[in-house]
Image (cartoon, rainbow, N blue to C red; front, top):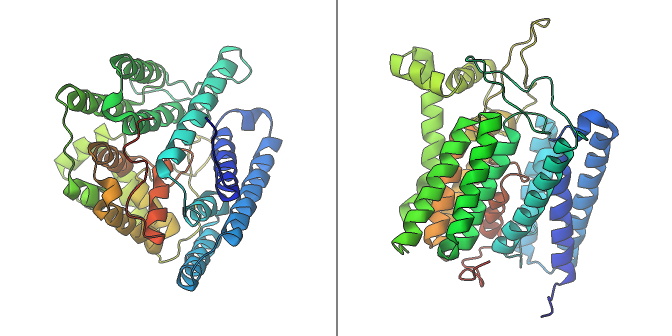
Length: 382
């Protein structure tokens, strides 16, 4: 069977593969072993953005859409400049503006294949000692060692596979086999055993149980309410809990302990950083060094991280965008509801929402710009 791909689609998928692969590589210890890789990653992302610009130029667009794209691009450039985050934000903006005639389900399938292949490659390299552990792998208070497994931080591998789990379940729907479900759980369990990344293991396990329940009882219902409001309500809850932590209620102290200090750090961020429209430069400190006066200050909540770093405009675009997607026909299936609920919950206290190498579903927002209502292949099982 021949596969027909237009030049526009080819440019998009090549760019997407380059961006995801480059940013994934940037989170492995290859960047520590070979420092020049960091510069190569930047070059590859620039090349990918040029390809996306070429795709946009080659495609026909209405004057209204061109004006809207210029406005979005201008905001993206302004926020990237203010926050010093070109290589994080602009590739996402460029991909979103090029979602015309692109099937998000196929994008997610391509992402799954690439990430699984890359994770397998890193696992082999780690096993063969081509890449090793990082000094800051981490030790829990109970003495348990958290292994990074070839990545630059101990939580990365588990977070990647959490997203693999969510999107695999989303694509396979009720056609998923029991052996696939068991395999997903066992890999999540294996990564949890080595990295001790609790939250994503619990989320992954819960998602697997939900999908098993849907499969066994052949449930096909979806929730428009959850589709529209999951992201918005999760952002509000994360913000309220973090802000309220300053009042040191015993319940919030206990919750902060469970969340390993995430509420406290987010609460401190409200005092230490401004809330701006177009973002600001923030020096995130990821490690606590006994020889330095610098204090760990990273905000893990995706919503608050985006708010402080990229500003109100970007956060509102994301939240309103997902609300609009929740009203469209393309979101009216059980597994979209499952996906958006777990992505929303995960984003409350983990920072991967806007990171394209983790979350290809951020490209759903492209359908807001192009006013696309449904997917031609929405019923296809991959």
